[in-house]
Image (cartoon, rainbow, N blue to C red; front, top):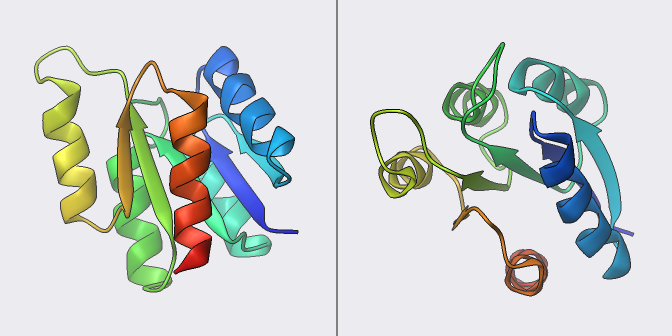
Length: 123
């Protein structure tokens, strides 16, 4: 069973993603910020990370940069609802530039997310 780490400071967002992934047959581990998520990954690597961009402690962009530097083959999907000064599409493009395989703007369509996750594992 493929294991996915979901990093999002919004509990409701994590639960929506977690339920969709578990219903599709994936195991899910959760973290509420990038620092905790990176530590979880370092101690017990998962097959994929889904990370929000805007979080306290360590945001998703910093998390992507740090983990891609340590683990170049890591698979990451980034999600964002937007920020105070830029539209989420701009942040998501940065996430893709730094190594995210796919990006999604919130609110996330669970069916589309599961399709993207399955495509990651089919390649």
